[in-house]
Image 1 (tube, helix red, strand yellow):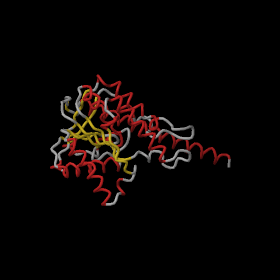
Image 2 (cartoon, rainbow, N blue to C red):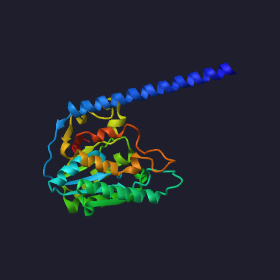
Image 3 (cartoon, rainbow, N blue to C red):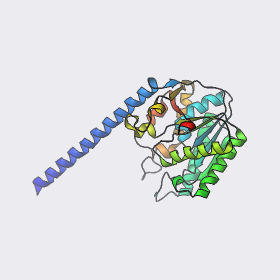
Image 4 (cartoon, rainbow, N blue to C red):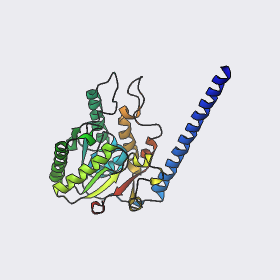
Length: 276
């Protein structure tokens, strides 16, 4: 019995070491492919004077994906609106001591504080308050209502550029947000350039397996050196996401996730609806 227990612990130890080795190798590969995309596989994109609407599925995606671009444009006085699609209430699902409504309020306050750092006025921030984690479960009527709300914002503001999470961002809310925005642009009959920003895609997709070749070669990078500290401050405002919310919880975002968003560049992919 004693020998059996020793063998069991030995096998368990080997399994854990093998899992850790695989995890570390995967993490290294993710880093290498991201650096390649950043410095070799993308074209330079300069900041222009075009007005912008950023559609963010959750309260933090906007700061992670395009916080630098937002800050750069706002420093030049360029009009920007930010639209949060969901209420963010699903990030601590199942927590026994913090209610969903409390999480919603925390994330709303974090969003307002983060965007203030980036230079966006509270009057230019819109919350659609759709159920976090449930965009894929909306009824047809709910989808049309959401598209209508987005179309009204697009029609009244008439932005020249739209930024939205990538259509294959490996998160249902993120991918559906792209489809809703695409439908809203069609409904509003506005002419805009559409840029996609990736939150999970470049973290979960080994060897860019979720990107077509024409999408990969269409990657662009924006230098954000002069506002890098602002972006970092904005991201760090979302304490509910990268720190445990209490002693009994773990952080929502996984270890090693944030480093990409603290670099002096942001990556965007140009959308072409005619090819989708």
